[in-house]
Length: 169
Image 1 (cartoon, rainbow, N blue to C red):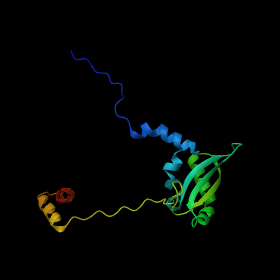
Image 2: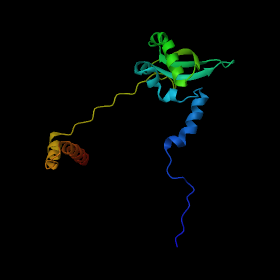
Image 3: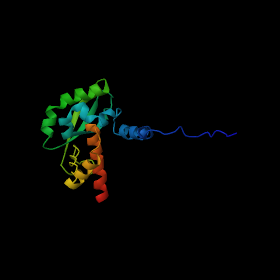
Image 4: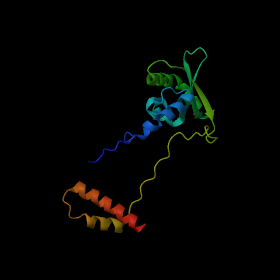
């Protein structure tokens, strides 16, 4: 009779669950009690504002009433951002669910700088995928020519083109 093995682990765990306590600790050290403000910044303030500004710190005063959100931006964008400060404060407070932020402070930095002063807020655009040469595409089309369903045939042609171009490299 086989004995059943008892595992000390609970099976697979999500990476987010394993790192959640460390991320929370790092973000709370900067005053971010709600990490959603960092992870969903573009959704909260909008794509245009997220491209020119990044939240750096939430600082609480001595009396504990209202916090100050510090935003990092380049010197050229600071006047535009200061005009949007009230709208940013309202959107961030909507994220928190109450009036947690009473003031928005804007910190300017150079476009290039030290570790936290780097101002490249938007991710770099992804390059367009390279098209396989016509000989590979013709061979891929020949491979999938017997398939009757158009969508399936196109998908098989793309797969064959990828496989054939990988073999050449």
